[in-house]
Length: 378
Image 1 (cartoon, one colour):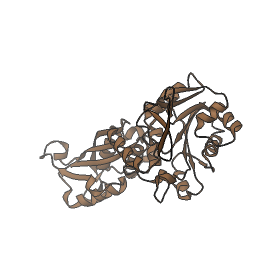
Image 2: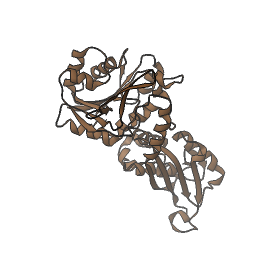
Image 3: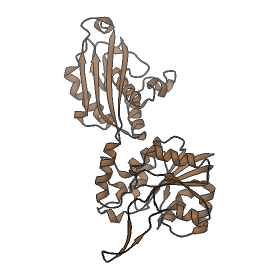
Image 4: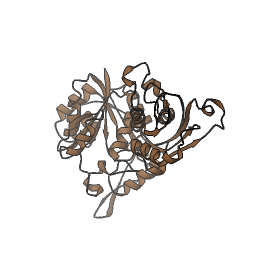
């Protein structure tokens, strides 16, 4: 038994304007689709994520095919796209499924979890907000009447269902619908209402982008992590620091390439994510990592941060050694780290200090490094 989420991202989003569909437009420096996906990846208990894409978005198919997602082709209408997403899960032994509109990037993990929890006690559940404003009817920009708001709710997604029940409901419905609750009700399913989130807005018009930006700023989660590493000197004619070979009369010893700076920085990112350290992700007892380039570890930490909904804000690395001299190589080291992490040069600091001839670094027995990383929610 498993749980899945279907992210419907095949629409063209014409009402919002612009030259590209809204799901590919950036919101706070990141495509809307990626923001939405990050929240579902961060939610616990979701085993599979289906991304429903338009056949017109050929480049996106290539991009997302290597991201651990299940891809499904969108249809002419929303209901058809959902049916395609459900079909893509037919061999995954799914018991619960969430269906979400990609254009709701401000969805919070807590609301995702609330819908999943509600499915423990009912066949279908969906978030909604009670209507609190007065309602009018109108024509030609004139008010023609009023509507009682009692018992009215504004629907949101993700809408959750027992998988077999919603598959059968869609098969019986066979036509388009405003959402999956409409399909479920047509099949006679009872849908539990879960309190929605006012910030879980759907981006429909151009003005919604500014509102979503404001919401995301208020939801920002900032994390700090630190890392520390040490490697002793041994035979060799250079050391590797921040991915840069630096000539020296000795090398650094370690299971991998012994890049003490990159190891400390990798651990700083893992620490900010509360995801352990390098040894947990790349055990030194595993021979495949013997002599490995340390950028493998750093890239993994950066990718893990993104999958958990974070971007790297800045990093600061200090090398502690009497020699070799770091200053002449610092800019190249910064650029190396920036390239690996996908950062600007001004987001990366590399500096050095001595220990005033004290301790193992003062005696020239090795090099130590401390690093700090700032992570910002995306």
